[in-house]
Image 1 (tube, rainbow, N blue to C red):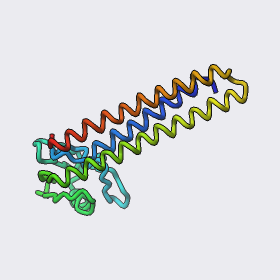
Image 2: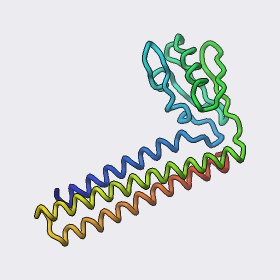
Image 3: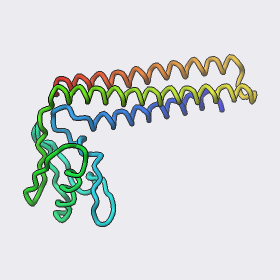
Image 4: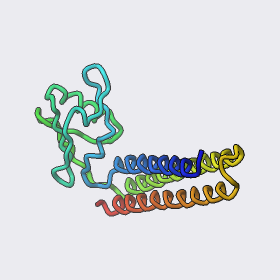
Length: 187
């Protein structure tokens, strides 16, 4: 592998790790209604599991309410059942056409638990980034051993990989800090 290949692969993989973190942070409640809160929900319908986004439009018309409007009214009961069965702790209200979920205010204790969860998710992302760094460094060592690059190129590649690692760890930290602030302020 060339130094460029190694760096490109590492950067793509680090970008994906940050993408996973962003997606996971979206699912954490902040006290405001956010369609992302139910995005991960899967509904048993037509004999198989389907993501809620494929079955309904999900919106947040008010800061404390999520509205789920099924494309097929026949799936309303299935969606309601999935929400109740989930560990989201929501109490859906079905009016025959759509489902409303009122988002309760968060207690200080719940907010602290969510901040802990944010820190855990962020640490997982940082570990993933560091594992990618390790893989890239191994690839650089192997390429040098296979005479595909010089020692200097290997060292430069490792330095650039370390710079990428710092950059993506910083992005993860910033995302976590923003989300923690949102959770603690209830924004």
